[in-house]
Length: 186
Image 1 (tube, helix red, strand yellow):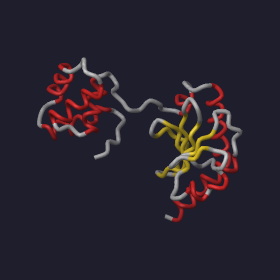
Image 2 (cartoon, one colour):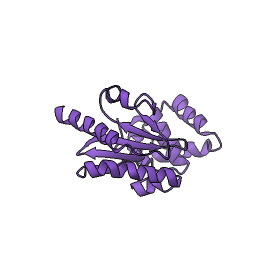
Image 3 (cartoon, one colour):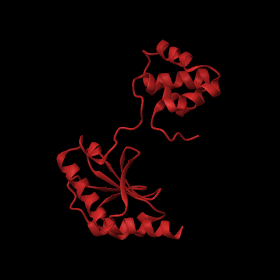
Image 4 (cartoon, helix red, strand yellow):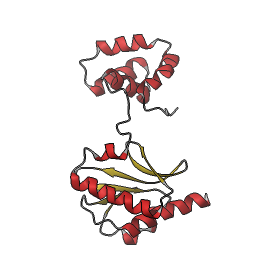
């Protein structure tokens, strides 16, 4: 079952129910293996206690002091640790789309900026040290736009653009329009 909360302790009731022991027992178990590496702790819970990957991950990370999977609450928080050039480019990407689609909402989902229409996502942006990833959503979107993506690195579901990309507002808004049309016709 998917957890809707970013708080790792939200897994605890399910862990107690599945394994029939209180969380105090599991926290004590984690103390006994505190010197092990992350993957060894995960393996301990999975192999010795039948934990699922999700439950093991939640308990291990919680015991290591990482109590939430949520790192950013706002786009500004997302941009803060980035290189100045990369942050400026992402701001321009967001602005280009927002000018054309002011009623859509930029949110943080999966720890990155995502564009939403109601409850559906239309577009996302991710950052790395080497490039910015554009995440157009929609069936066959990359195939449809293939002829316009020749200068970029195209992966399975993303488009790589340089950190100092000269923002192609027309391409961005067309990618978003593709998804919005798809959602309208669904």
